[in-house]
Structures are given as structure tokens and as C-alpha cells.
Length: 354
Ligand SMILES: [Zn+2]
Ligand SMILES: [Zn+2]
View 1 (cartoon, rainbow, N blue to C red):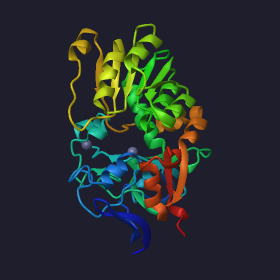
View 2: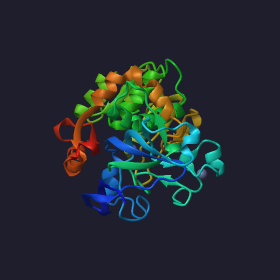
View 3: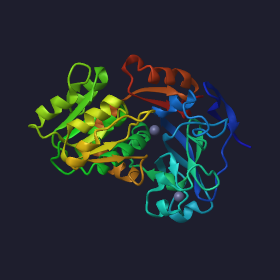
View 4: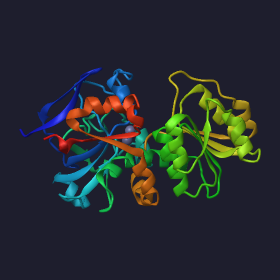
């Protein structure tokens, strides 16, 4: 059995950089040499045991799901679909069963066999992921990247494609005003997704250097700590409110602001969620016909994200602030989690380990 280096999570808050067997690929998989993995906000939560029995379902596990790399081996049937050794690719977490009603309708992040490891995969959550030299990835979870897209940019296409899904589900049309609630990864990428889709005025509520980054990306900044987000949004939109609200904070206050700041006939598209349910002003949503939609992952938006990324390539590169070798994962996680050194997206490089 060939070996590889990986970050193995043995139990909550206990991971090591160690050597494990290289994964064996299935017929519809490809083996990829992992070049870049972007740390996701969900990773530290999984590490700290915030989703017991759900993410992961068992230990040990290799986390990491925002990744890019190169195909080094093609599964017995993957070649039928055109995949070849040497292809540069990036991946997402979810692999639906492909057969249930939701999968057949393209809504594979809502797979009815979710979590059944015989037929469903979720890399870096339930199935072994990318914090390793190699990943065995199902061909349903990967996309080709253009020659001029570097691996770090490709690794964050997972994040970008989620934001794109959230913005698409808001019903954004060219010229629409947008309020992005929250200046974190989903907020920044939602700004970029809205820009590529032709948004009019984009307002972003956040704080500190993360809000300044939102401004650099093209949004009008609102500091939620010193300003009334809903009132200022109404002012900035001529009293109408934002036609599309992208809610990424998952906080009671953020959700409340979203409901007040949305325009009549508008839409609130949510990706953040609170641990406890929060009250929402249903009467307002009903009387003003405001849609309130939830979003799960990135169904069929990875290729779309890759296609539009070139319009915002400089902005995406501004969001990638740090790189570490995989061997220094603990340090990378610390920098990411504690936002040290103004870190935004932090990348680990499994091939730098030697
Ligand atoms: Zn992620
Ligand atoms: Zn399914």
C-alpha cells in the first residue's frame, strides 16, 4: 500500500500530521494530487466537535473540501467521461447518490440518501477529504480549471460557487440593489457573484478590516456596530430597501435586519443560520411578498463560478492572504480561526511538505 501524508482528525480537537494509506479509487473516481486546500469556516467547527455524529459520522477522518489539484490516476469508468491523467481540476464536497428524486432534479445537495456512505459522499465532512497529498474524488464532484487559473484560486471556487448559488436563488436581475449581510467569506464572494451578474448598488454590512475588504471589492460599507443597517439601507435605496438581500451572518440581528431592509417584492436569500431559531416578522414577509429562501451548498454552480471568475480575478486574489505547508496545518488553522495578521482565506499546500 502506498502511503501519503495527511492531517488526520482522531477525535474532536485532536488532529495529527501523519502518514496513512493512499486512497484507493472507485470506478467513477479519480485520484488527484492535491495542490491547494482552502480552509473553510466549517472546518474548525467540525474539529471542535460542533456537529457530533453528523460531521463526521466516525473517526478518524481527513477533513478539507475546498481543494484543487491534478489527476494522477483515472478510475475504470471515469475515462469514459473524458477524464485523463494530468487534468487540472478543483472539487466540491457533495456527491449525491445520483438516483433519488432530488438528485435527478439536479438538487444533489439535498440528496435523499444524504449520509448513507454506500451511495453518498461528502468530502471533508463524512468522507475523507483533501488535507492530504492525495484525494480520491468522484467525477461528479470535480470540474476542469482553465490553464490560466492558479491552484489557490481554483481551491476557492468551492466557496465562490456556493455564493453564486445563493445569489442566483435571490433572483438577482441586472441593476438590482443588493444588501449583503456579513463581511466574511460568503459575504465577499456574494459581492463578487452579484457583480458578475450585473447588480446595481451593492451594500455590505460588517465590521473592521473584513468590511474594508468588502468595500475594496466594490460594496458600500455599513458598520453594523455603529450604524442601523436596515435604516441606512433604506436611505441608500431611496426608501425602497434592497431588492435582493444575501444573509450570511446567521445571527438573530442579521436576519432581523434582512427582513426590515428587503424591498417590497424582494427576496432574502440565506446561507448563514443560527443554532437556535430566531423570530422573523412573517407579517411583513407576507404583506410585502418578500421571498425567504434557504440554500445548501453549491448544486451545479462550480462550472459557472469557474466561467465567471476571470471577471473578478484580481478581487479573488485579494481574498487569499496566507499559504502554509500541510505540515503546519495547526498554525494555518490558528491564523485562520483567530483572524491573525488580517487573514482572510488561508491556503494549505500538501505538496510543500517535503
Ligand atoms: Zn467550505
Ligand atoms: Zn440522491
